Amino acid sequence: MATDVIVAETISKRFGAVVALEPMSLRIAAGGIVGLLGGNGAGKTTTMAMLLGLLRPSSGRIEIFGLELERHRYELLPRMNFSSPYVDLPHRLTALENLRVYARLYGVVRPEARIAELADDLDIGNLLRRPVGKLSAGQRTRIALAKSLINRPALLLLDEPTASLDPDTADWVRGYIQRYRAESGATIVLASHNMAEVERLCDDVIMLKAGRLVDRDSPAGLIARYGRHTMEEVFLDIARSGARSAP
Amino acid sequence: MIDHDHRHTVELRRTGPLTRIGALVLRHLYLLRGSWPRLLELIYWPTVQMILWGMITQFLVTESVWVQQAGGALIAGVLLWDVLFRGQLGFTLVFLEEMWSRNLGHLFVSPIRPIEMVAAFMLMSLIRTLIGVGGASVIAILLYHYSIFDMGLPLIAFFFGLIVMSWALGLVVSALILRFGLGAESLAWFLVFALAPISGVYYPISVLPDWVEPIAFALPSAHIFEGMRAVLIDHVVRWDLLRHVFLLDAAYLVIGVAVFLLAVRIARQRGLLHQVGE
Image (cartoon, rainbow over all chains, first blue to last red; front, side, top):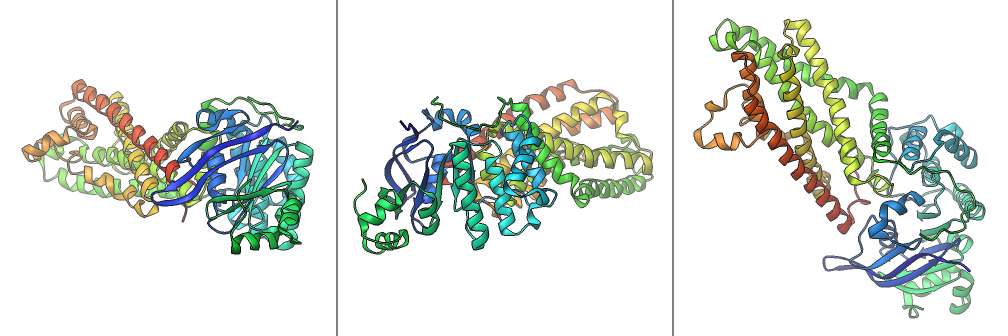
């Protein structure tokens, strides 16, 4: 039986008068890839930031691996990691220097061996000695992915992991995420507004719209229930005509 | 804690604060090592200041009895003032580097705690100040045959008194930058200069108007520069002044840390940690 890795109870976020996220509860089971799907301003990044502890919810509570995030943050963070196009690695440091720093921060016992392993897996060996700022967007994404995997997290949060990548690199990254989940058994939460990506990677999709959880199902389940052929069509249905009530 | 089926785990050690502090210091040492202009800049301004005031001292020695008696008080003042300025700037610039590089989000979801970040920034501030002011002090020996090290053990007390005060200022400036964004970064360069006139760097506090003196003596720096002149002119160590320095430093440091931690807390409430950058 799958256990819930994440349990969020009525979490919400307000910034003054602006409601970024209406009260929302969700449970995320171990070992799956869960998509947070929604348009701009839907609340994907806000939800992800709250799950990481970067942002404090205005109300509600979050448990990760059975521990309350707010109270046990520093016990939980070594088992988590994340990557986002909105958060960079220092550009003036080489990729290798960045990975060494983060390996030490996360307490990786044999950092050089882990970096070598990631260099093989992600085909970044030839990039390690170059400053991150001199790399292309695709190369930087692979280095950011390496950083997010440095501690081999049991819970990996990826915010738009293929944003601004060419189709070939994006496809490669998606394949790698699938392989990582398959071999590690990690739970992956992925925020995206790329429907094809969500359809390919996710077992479970949480649909957000204007700060509300509006639907949740597997991609196939959503497509069937909305009587559509693709997730893109489901997304447009929800975005343009309102949504069914949250399950 | 629930332990899930996590098939291939990387071995992680339960790291202590020193490992995490060391990792963040390493990040900034990599930055310094990779950029010779940054290293040069650390020494450049303290040296220029010291040369300028060395020349002024050489001129005034022939004109002023006080300067003759002071035995290098002006150069010592310049070098010690730079401990305060460079220490504060060093702390704040290290924090700013994390904002400029949009790295704060990664740091705040890593296992390093805010208080450990503060410790790492303090260490980097110390390293940067030792390189900058240490280099200028050696050049003062070569150019003017003036060694600030002749002050002996009191110099260590003055140095630490000033560096701790600089960390307290750096904490408050970093907190303001975190709260108000990079638009407030110029505070890193000018805020400390507001304290220069009332710190008595180049003149005794008694020169100040009566009503300003209590304000001046609320600063550790005023006691330090008075103490410095006592050593250089009267050849006595004013322990009473040093006691004030360390009491005031302790109070300012506690306030600085509290303000910084409050700013982090507010940043987590307002979503500032993953939205910062150029």
